[in-house]
Image 1 (tube, rainbow, N blue to C red):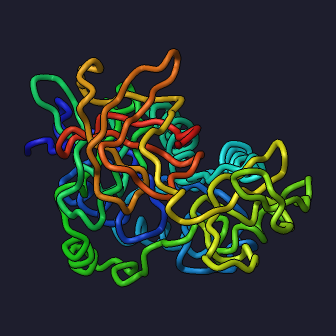
Image 2 (cartoon, rainbow, N blue to C red):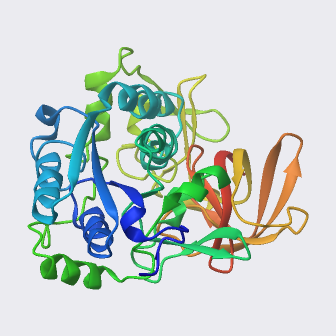
Length: 366
């Protein structure tokens, strides 16, 4: 039988660790590989206490999800292990999430989880199990041509997760596999039903896993040692317009919650953590065309002197045209058309056509 994972072994001699969240996507990945004759080992990471999850179905990696992953493994007949990663997840993801908001940034913990936990710690665990590859349920296409491996947007554009995977390294990419890149979500659910999986109709996770009710401020207040501090709401000239109860309540582009009367609605333009100020103004002032980045990661075979690329400044945005230039140790993106509400702490992800070539973290937009 052909080895669909591109590994020079028969499937029966190929050991694959599947990262199982308890959802339909990773469960179908395990089912496909098991059906193709691979030796499948399922691993689920316990990322936070199930007591905090309240068994909600919009999250992943806690409570009922761990049970669901085990049931899938039992149904399909392969080994399944649960590893306690709560401490690592708190240190590398939750604490960083809280720290970012306290610094006036708007973090994306899912990218950080991929970078620091799933594709680092879990990947090393898979190697210790003598696996030949690790597969996940992410919607992205891995393409190898002439011994060069690149990542491309998923066939199902509505499910594409390339934005959240820009921090993958070439070394990690050699070991990772993404079997769902060529599938539509509807096909995946149909396969789940065909394989008799109990998760076939399970709802997709939507919220940040450790913020199951969507209220990140309440989560920060519960966990953070430093309580939020009141400060001033000011205009661009530094004139005091009102007070706020803590900068963690605000993100760039926000309109609600400012509670200052004016002839036009105020929007959050910037958050100054050092001065503990929220700077507000007219929505037209939210438009920017230059974005500074740090910790840039390159995946694809892009000539970095060729600066003509497209970028995504948020996961739901279509890529927009931009130029990329090296700026000392960091990078600067110049947008060909101004964008509104770009927030430090978010990711700027680079594309060449449908190929994901890298990305970095936004430090400033102006």
